[in-house]
Image (cartoon, rainbow, N blue to C red; front, top):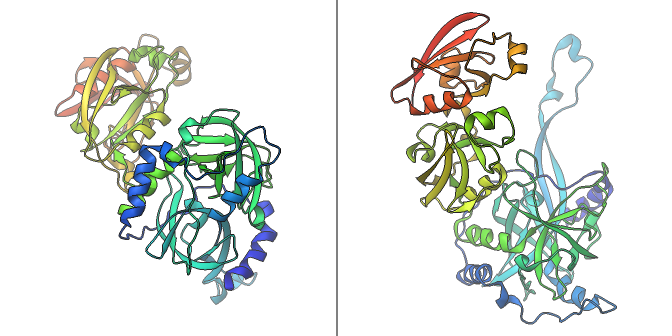
Length: 495
């Protein structure tokens, strides 16, 4: 088949490639979910213990893991893909004299890819494979190769880049084996596990190791999914293992191998990471039913802050864990629920928040339309708010920063800042360290380095008072500030 030709090319190139990026954000193909599949996955996610049947009983002290491998190998498949991409033609030296020629037009070429997947369900002549979203991306062709040598064309039923999972479907000509799902929450550091997949194109490779850690994190802001706590293992995982199975000694799938921390050439150094199966099972149910995963949206720009800094002191959050709200999206759920810039979120639904990544995960895991209780610190005092979350929009819409309010970040006037900005020690206030392009603050003419001394005719002593005053404004915000020794003022709309 055409895809088999690409396997050879992939095998030659894979040693220099690390397949741990979140990959392409794929379009989602909505499809009616098979009732049996969704019911089973929902049941398994709620009660992992029911999945401990018909699994090979294996003792950690035995001499061989062959029984486990024999039971699990048939449910792990090879996923081969081909994606059509566009690239401008090679530059000609004659372009210096005559300009771009016809050879510089966009050209299409086919890019192969290779990964692994796990058969999680089969019903009504359709089988479903769980893999990583970055394995399939926006592939034009997908081929599934089973352990027994059968090959089938497959389609992407749905995928999610933020969690890096995807579900494929294909129509087998005969019965296919189904994976037994385990309970990833019961994993302990030191437990034996096996990684099964197709590293560098070597089909059905089995490696063994232990659980090195649980609750490992990826993002935010990088190529590693930020909405998942990962299982870390020293079982050898290499390019091509992505989407394959992490298995316990009962032959149950406890994780989906996703990324590695390795050398520049992509080699294994004993740092492999897998999505816990309990996390993946709940997401797969949504993909089967809706074709996509729906995340809750709060509508804030947040950050971590060292609780021993001058900013923490000004805000009254010393020695507190949580996440600081810097901006809010206009007309977002956060605004409607009363959250304001300068609020420090410490609890969501009664659960303590340690940092920004944890807050992102907690909000993302909540359903749109859910009333959510927040505990915050505002001006040094505790405050409880209720916010009704909305459905998170596509990433390109969420990234439109011109809707952020107020569109600036204020910082305390420490001695170092005073010296760098040339601010007289008799001047109190807060210095602007960021002004976001396109926001009301930027349109009003504010710039980084401006020192705000008054908000709505009230003198401010520090950054804490700055946030308190702008958040309390009802109609407009009037700022008095100093720039290069000159006193100036601007006005922009309040929330």
